[in-house]
Image (cartoon, rainbow, N blue to C red; front, top):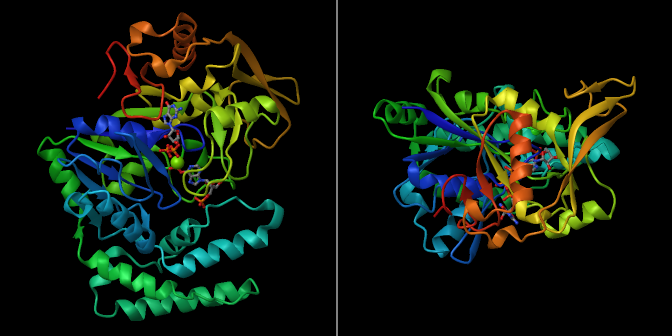
Length: 427
Ligand code: GDP
Ligand code: IMO
Ligand code: MG
């Protein structure tokens, strides 16, 4: 049996959480494989909105096992808060949650380093969520990090102190003092909580599940253009956000990969700094932000908005081997008479290309085609047969350009506002 993987194709916040929740009933296991509390995955059903940061989006389905894989960086304090919130809402998350012993721990001083190093970058700052992601992955690669499995070792406190003291020197290098206030006490309280959970060798768990024919869905965080290698470096996150990250982040061999769901918005957004070729700085961008409620699920920051960018999508589809596309937030474009699609870039040399230049900061202009808008409130559409013709033409155009079928169209934040093409409303 194969592991299916769901990946964001743009700069994150495509709607991954919603689709994982929609697809989850057909799976036995949902697993996160990279990222950490920088993610904010929103799910809506039965009139309630839930935002998950580190817990996989399969958690609301009682029959599903949810795994936090070895490739994740976990902040115990944020995690405990998330777990308690779920408990308040009547979800027994501890029952179905498994943590890899190899998952790296974010300790409070990682967050401080994130902040002081961003401050030092000044105008060139990455726009990090300041959750400690970069510093924790640095320590992982530097082979000095702490892992979930270490918390049961008798000398865990000593190891923690050693890492914290190392961080103190780094913070001092930036000319600041390391003041953790109550964070250390909260950290150890959260570590005690972690000790009560199921800490597992998740690579064995997953491979046994594959052998037993169980169905597994790997839930990506961030987006392909935030990938450490292929994203808009250095304005990226510190993990492999691509399909390849699921292999190393869960211990899944490439031959076990099945379907690859590529998720994208019908337009495009980005939060934080860095290149964004189709960004709109005018009232159209403002209109999209308002209609799409484009404010970050983790930091509350306003998201930058622009038109859909096909060179970006083609690049992400190529790198991930996407087999099915899911188009999100189509309802947000209802008001527009014309929908613009960037098909190519015109470089300073005059060359027209549909490939991403090495540096997206070089001078170039997006080339657009204009397609007619549908002017119908898609959120009210119940079946694919009722989708307006102009909208179907838009989807067909994208399929022709991208050479991958669009199998799911999302027309609202709720679980129910999901149309499977050639099927009636899901859920
Ligand atoms: P993720 O990080 O990829 O899981 O996405 P986020 O949760 O950060 O951002 C997606 C936002 O769009 C959330 O507020 C969702 O509730 C919302 N959303 C998801 N799908 C749709 C949709 O089809 N239409 C509208 N209007 N909102 C959606
Ligand atoms: P989800 O999973 C959107 C962005 C940050 C910043 C850059 C680096 O919800 O799609 P980091 O904190 O990782 O060092 O920040 O990456 N970023 C995201 N943008 N969605 C996310 O996650 C993101 N996670 C990180 O804004 O530009
Ligand atoms: Mg998000």
